[in-house]
Image (cartoon, rainbow over all chains, first blue to last red):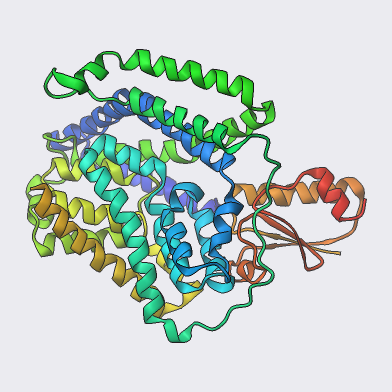
Length: 389
Length: 77
């Protein structure tokens, strides 16, 4: 970071410390909410949900061959396959715009053209494993599922729309000089990798198993023995690692998990503090009056959905921070529909990323892409809001 | 010799650049090293992953930090 940014940051903190009326009851209450919300995350979500999900993301990054996925974006690849792979590839390829944007530029210039490229651009940040898991865990399985389905469906739709709108411009692309990421030598048959991934997912599911509202039936029965099942899966994982994996593979798994953790956790904790300070936990008032939020994005009106779609498209959410912010908003009276609209437009677009996208595909295409995201998010929000109500 | 490191500026890209510089210093090979951060220029090389290392116009490695021994072979040491 440059020195002048340090200076600006220090001046900002100083001014806040000097002028904010910290002893006013509302500010005290908000500050308390910030830390209570952070505690709720630490106690409820970090150990049982976030940590296993980080290990899964790390495993995907190391053990799933990126080249095998990316080759479907090439100029010669079948179109239907290219869209299908692009719309789910976010789960496999990316948590960070650092990989999404260069790949997007590559697919656009050299590979499948604007359609698959925009499919990938949308799905990349929108459907990574961590985001879906945390959404389902914190905001409820309905929103988590709707987010997953919406993100995959949108990636398809938006890519196809872009392809149809700019069909005439598409020239034949040269298929040569297309370099895939290098592959390390494979040492295991595929089924061992699949079993290993399934074990990780098993740990996540059972460790994060919530206590059902009514203490009867299947859900309760599983809840009572969830730690035994989780420990069983952990032992299984230990055996798999011992017998199937080389030491250096385990090391790179650990390194990539730690890389994700380092990148995501500080941002998430910061986001939780900010969301707690501004919005408070559900049912608790903080800095922003609940009435404002209910007026703007309460209910399921067209305006509420459109407003949150466009706000999400402009605002920058660091990876995963959309979850605590939405938790605060829903707790303060945001409707389910607008919440989904924000989830679908938020992570995929932001003002800074629009500028980068513009430098690759030009102003007009960027505006069309952003417009499509906002319109589809609004519609999906309306439908989901009507269904969930 | 002309060496280009392609990458938009993530931590792995700087690690790749540092590694190449280290090898050059170790072996005493003289080369122009350029870091390419412009996304369009990266895409022109057709690489589908960053960081990537290009030596005299030839793409040598894509999507990972190269190993020291590999870099030594590429620069002919």
